Length: 344
View (cartoon, rainbow, N blue to C red):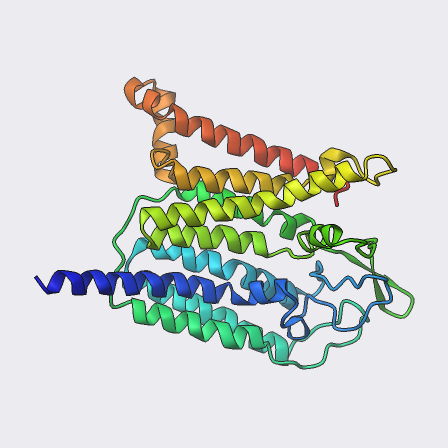
């Protein structure tokens, strides 16, 4: 009688530790979203810009170590959250190893390969990457503490979550600030910025692509909650993440509508962050559609059955899954094509 509550309490603590590990692994991305730790990360500007509203990044870098570190920090929470549903100690140790690898690479990059500053073109000063130093050991420690209580394996819509992460990271792949060199190696931004005239404009600017990693973190935390928490809390987290992702496209529409009387620099289709709208739809689908279980193995099995003309009953049951997969593919193709046109 007394063992069941104890086991349930241990399982709850392990779930909190696993979610906390993903949250801690997302810490550097969250901190930089609010301007904390910019001086210690190489993809932000470390000097005051001469523009009326400083553009501090993140930038599409030319140096390979800085670019690899950018993607390592951005995708590390995704890797940790992706390993959680496996529920094994081996997966936990793999996640800890991934955290240690990114931390070690961040230290090497900061102390040995700082690279040029995006604003001045000069070699960056050696600054310890404090967001990584503080957050990553906490994430690794939480995972090691949770390793004693294996997580029960659950059915997981891996394709839906993968599509949501890809849509959320679309701006990081295609819409980061670019830099060009003038004269004596001084870097200037191709972007044109205007100081926000109101709190509404400031909110629209804050939610822009300059805060480029937060959508990925929102999707990752929703997936981690779905994997570790109860159904109720998982759905609540997924709904909150989808609503937050949907906020940016709505702000884009409101901004375009409020300035439609003037000469808006870009057309409506290019001014809205459609990739975040797609990410919100995919997160909501993965959260609230438990019957839509798209997996790589299931997709291959469905394709083989359709080619062979077998299992008509199975094909009928999988029609909804196939429709979702077609919608994801069509939206991805459209985003790829639209990325070759000028965007905000």
